[in-house]
Image (cartoon, rainbow, N blue to C red):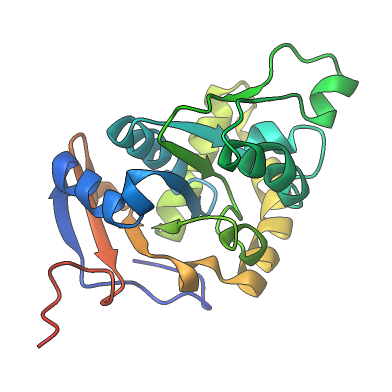
Length: 221
């Protein structure tokens, strides 16, 4: 896997089915309820994994792209903690309109019912230190740089950008994302790492690596 120079490849890797993945994630949450942060680089597949995790755990996914919309692409934790995580932990329904939504009259809101068992918050920087202290577990979706870039460019073209516009947008975004992740290093606080290599990803199968102290298959004798 071709990674950024500051990031070390996780392992050992093993493929697990959805039932085993749900069991692994449940072990990371107190009584199966809590806040799960899903982080990864752009194009890593973190949104796909977050939706899979939420479906398996009976949770709801909040996307940082919604919180950060016309706010700040990187610094959105000031919205996530007081308006999403803390109210939900208090047992309140979350029905939040971020400032960018209000200013530009975007329809709808960010919603998390109080009675869901798991709040999954995903996005670049979701596993940052300032958010991890408010969560129960962090997942890092580790990606190959070439594959992630290809996925990101393909997604942007599908959203309507020309290939040239997609290239420019990707490069501009990386100028903010890369130094932030290099400084915060969220993969170092991950309880579970997911491989997003094309060869490791399939419906009903996820390739994972866990910290030895979190891995139920680790022999502690």
